[in-house]
Structure formats: C-alpha cells, structure tokens
Length: 487
Image (cartoon, rainbow, N blue to C red; front, side, top):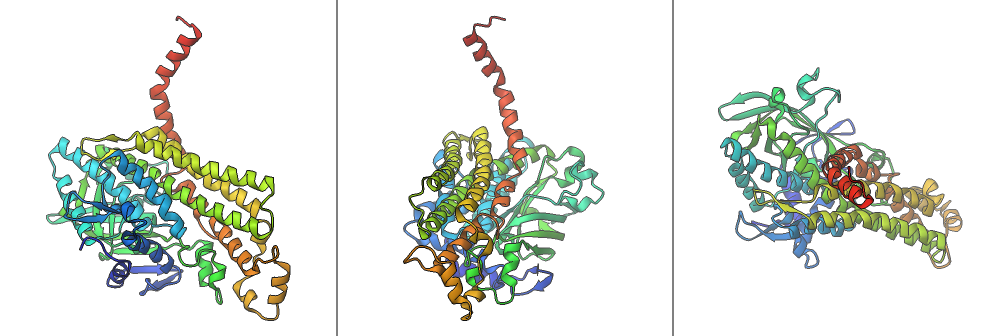
C-alpha cells in the first residue's frame, strides 16, 4: 500500500483506541463527534485528492525511500521546485476545505526538520539517528499514515529555562532511560489535528542548554500509544456545534470548519530506541527548532493565501447579493484584501526559489524572505478580517439561526426584512454571511491562529533582526560610498 483512500484513513481511525476528553466528557467514539468529524473530513481530503487528476501532480510524488508514488505530505523537499510546490499545494488545497489539515501539514514540516538535523547530528557524533529516521519515514510512506508534528510545550513561566521550571513537566522530557528505549512525560499544547493523526512526530520547542539535556529529545510515536491523553479544543465556534437545535446553516463552514487542536499529554509514555531521533544532543536543538519553524512559516503563507481567496469570494458574493457590485469604495477594499494576500504568497514563492541545499540533501527556503512572508501573511488575514466586517455589514452581528429560519411563524419576516436585491435568495444571503463570520474569526480561530501559528510575530522579527545585523555592514558601506563619505 502506498496511497490510501479517504475511506481507508477514516476506517483506520476507528480501529485505534485513544483517551479523549471533549467539553469535559470522556469520549469513546471521537470519529463521529460533531466537534471532531469536520477535522477528519478536512484531513480526508488530503487522501481523496491524491486520486483527483486536478490535484494528483501536487499531492503525489515518487519516493526515494520506497517503491512507487507516495503522498507529498510524507516527503522531504529535495529541490527549489519542491519548496515552491509546498506553498502552491496549500494555496490550492485550503479553498477546498477552508479549515486546517494540521494532521498532515505540520507533520511534513517536522519531517523535513528532523531529516536534515538527524543527518547533521550523525556527522558530529557518529550516531545513527538519520538511518532510524529514514526507516521510520519509509514505514509512514508505505502505510500512507497521517503524521502530526508536535513542537509547542506548555512552558509555564516563560522567563525560566526548561530545567529551571518549578514543575519539570512543563516541558516534555525523559523521566527514565531503559535498555529498550526511553519514558517521557509532559505535554504538547495547541496541537493542530493531533487527535485525528495516525502518528506523532515530536520535536523540542526551543533552544535547550546542556544542563537541560533531558529536554533535548525528538521521537515518533503511534497516536494510540497508552499514556497519551487528548483534551480537545473548545473555542466558541466549536462549542456552537453542541448547542441544542443548532443546524448546518449556523456554522458557516458546516462540513469542514473546525480547527481541531488539542492539549496532548504524555503520561509516562514509552518510546523504543528505534523511534528516537534526538537524545540529549542539546547543541542541535536550535537547528531542529529553527528548521521546523522556517518550513512551517513557508507553508503557512500558501495556506493563508488560500483562506484569503475564500474570504474574497465570500465578500464578493455578499456585495453582489445586496446590489453593490459597482460601488468603487467596495472594490477598493477588495483590491486591498487581494494585495495583502498576494504580497505574502509572492514573498513565500521567492523564499522557496532562493532555497538552498543542506548537507543532507534537503532544501531550506531563504530565511529572511520566509519570515517576512509569515509576518505579512498574519497581517493579511487580520486586516482582511477587518475589511470583511466592513463589507459584510450589520447582518454579521445579527444573523438569525437555522431554527429561526425553519420556524413558519417568523420565516416570512426574516425573508422579507433580510432580503437583498431582487432575484437573490434570503437564505443564500444568510449562508454567505455565516461563512464570512467564520472566516473573519467571529466563529473560528482563523485570525488568531494566523498570527500565532508557526510562532508569534516577535519570533519572526527576531530572525529578521539577526539577518539585518548580518547585512548591516554591507548596507552602510554602500551608503557611505554613494554619499562620498571617506572615513
């Protein structure tokens, strides 16, 4: 088996036992839970579209680890073209679901970072992490499993290093070393799609100092391993799906519109040595984290450009429904939204085109362009959400529920007083307003996640400051020469 169908992916989830808590309750059938199923449907598209001629060239790639084609989400980028395709794929795929495929997307960025870093660790220390990792990756490709990438620890007191925390479990760490492996304890927070992944690839969250080497670990673990506990997300948009009488008109993006993150607890989980890819090599923690972050920021720009495309489409429909298609001030806002999105997307494509080879053969995108693209991408989603509020109007704040719409006593009033221009269905106006509400963050986490995903804005500014300082000497020298300054 090299490529699974969507049905096979979902069937595989049903065959796994996991400890899951949703809205305060322990859930056994999480696959059909109304707050989880939309996430599964989004991830299922990454399997389904691999058989779609329109997406096949983007989602399917020949592997150098196993025979035959594999899903691109399980591959390493070996060229500038691969990096470009990473961005383009997400820009094309995101409008198909309008949500998140973190159970595969984040995993690919973790795969890429681990592939490069394990090679570098082996070169310095003579370990065999890279061989282990490639063997594990070949298994993932052969079985076509959904791999989630886990990086963010709970952290507690941010002014303290991992080893300085009052509670050592604030960062995932090794609590026991055995002949056959290690035992880990702690948690990974805000893990997009982790609940609906088949496998977890776990990396450090930040630079680890030698005195905190027990926190310098990277490993892979099957998602149904005993000791792993999920506490599922509950933002307002997700909780709305649990309201009595709530219907699909109330969600904006009914089929796919849940982000699907969870707090993942590792309660003394055993990891065999063959699945350990970093153990106490604290001096390589920075490389692994930075490579992951850079790759995730690059991918982010394709994803958010796709979100902006949907929001633009929804806003244009909303305008069309109320007869304002010729209003110049509306088009000025729409063009600004488009410009915001294209700036980030174009910068990411440039970062990919200036990508370079590492000793492992894996390619990395340009560091400054990637971080600039991510900053602009987060800003684009946030600013576009504000512009969408302006375009969408007051109905965004007063949308009637599906139960209101289905109530025969008041439906005629809703139909009469929320109508748009002649020939436009009031129901369609309500539906597109709900979608705008969802995309702009009133019933989703999209803007907040866009700012914070891949690291908050300050982490990108830090990388840009480093690059700016590196180039400052040349910049100032050229300025002196052109100004005629001799000293």
